[in-house]
Amino acid sequence: MRIFSKAGLIVSLVSVVLAGCTSQHQPAQEGFGEYLGGQHARNISDSARAAELFGSALEHSPKNPVLLQEAFSLAILDGDFDTALDLAKRQQQVGQPNGVGLMLLSLNSFRRDDYDAAVEQLGKAKGTGFDSLVAPLVGAWIEAAQGRLEPALEALEPLQAVSVFNTFRLAHTAYIYDYLRHDEEAAAAYARALASPKQRSLQPVLAYGFFLQRQGRNRDAETLYKEYMEKRPGAEQLAEALSDLDAGRPPEEIISDPYTAVSMALLVAAGELSRDNARTPAILYARLATFLSPGYDEAYYLLGTLFIRLEQPKMALRALENIPRDSRLSEMTRIREALSWDNLEDTEKALSVLRAELQSNSENRNLRTAMGDIMRGHEWYDRALDEYDLAIGNIETPVPGDWFLFFARGICYERLDRWDEAEADFETALELRPDEPQVLNYLGYSWIDRGLNIEPAQVMIEKAVEQRPNDGYIIDSLGWVQFLLGNYEEAVRNLERAVLLQPEDPTINEHLGDAYWSVGRKLESRFQWRHALVLDPDKERIPAIKDKIAFGLVLAETARQ
Image (cartoon, rainbow, N blue to C red; front, top):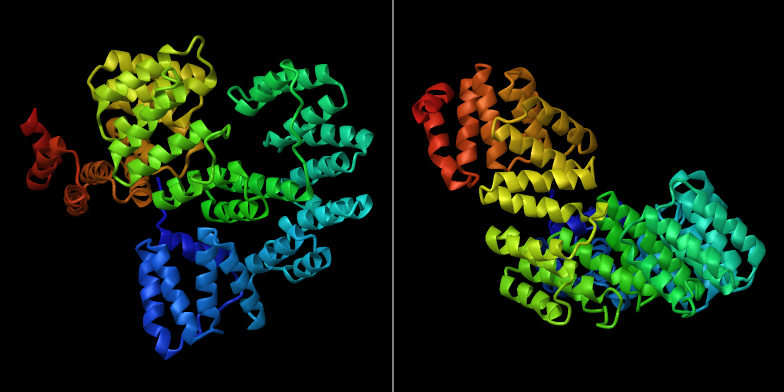
């Protein structure tokens, strides 16, 4: 997994989306020490200290665009919108506005119902990278908030030019008709939105279902929910909507006001970006969603998830603490909290969070799985196995979404040298998710490592590579099977690529050393083996690697037979 530091996160915020400032503006000499200190604090992930130091430097250079932008990026990252708004205004005053600042100012005017000011700021944001998606949506809902249907629909038209953005246009066309109570047009617009092949969000489905219920068309709503539950097994929101319908509870209003509509769009965009591993822009969109809708649990949950993936557990905990205990996301929030504490190396705290939840729901599969995942991460395979057994024991009939449980338990079996049970779980996982690259790679590599089913394993790994062409571990598996089959030149090509993708992995470096030796590149092979030694390999591999360095591949293997 590629890891981003907080320094990298903020640099990305500055370079990708906070355009409009150049590095030629140096801070005043009096504040240069604070500026350097702020840079250092930011680089070691101490955002509070970084914000303090950049603020101090700004006192000496209040109009310096570099400092204004550094401070602004930290404020957005931390969700300190009061500070961010002040800094955005100051950036405008010095003639160095940026797209995020202008959008934040526009959203601020929008939520205060100052529509003229919101439109003015939107106009200034053109060409900054945000006008292509956010500006048309905000513009449309400014018009809808004033009851102006035709101008609202016209404002969405620019989204049609980009196929990905067109899904937003279709959905928000339906939402605007629905919000303004043009029921006949809304029904047709919902149908068009759901027919879009690029539509992945469940929000239009839920909004349409609630629209149908409001129209008294409960049977149609039930059919809709069941249809999408078949497409999205395990989607809790659909299950809740169907349960509420069966119980006669009235539906919630998805589009209760224009601000909620824009917040929802921002969160959908954040979700799409996070699925494409564009985590920094995803955080930005999710932050803006919480600015418009401070009680938006889903946005805080996504922020927590993204900060965990970026290995920023303190930031994750700060985001997750905004989600109340009575939220429908409470259970998953506790799981994210546990992962954050584990990342902070307080594993006992992490497990205690989950145990507390299990006291009232001992059969909860998600909580048991999270316990197992944390234990497996610490190589406590026996204890993890017990948790996975309990989770799987609560499954009546496995569904595709259960593949990971069997995969994770299979890993524990494999690490405990219980291969027959591991293989059975891997094969079950593949039956549930036939094209899952993680399972294809792990089972294929395990076969190769045991000298089993070499050719089928190669086919499986090649299939995994097709889906994950930039995954160094999977590329390593392909190179290693080619090595075992004697295709040394091909093995070298793939193992070199694997090392580029995962340079700090000792096993991949060792494999490349073996492949180099087999094509006569002996100096390079010893370099790779030495490099593998300094990368903290498994203890049982150290003697073998040292023998290769001393005697070469063939003699080392002969001596160890």
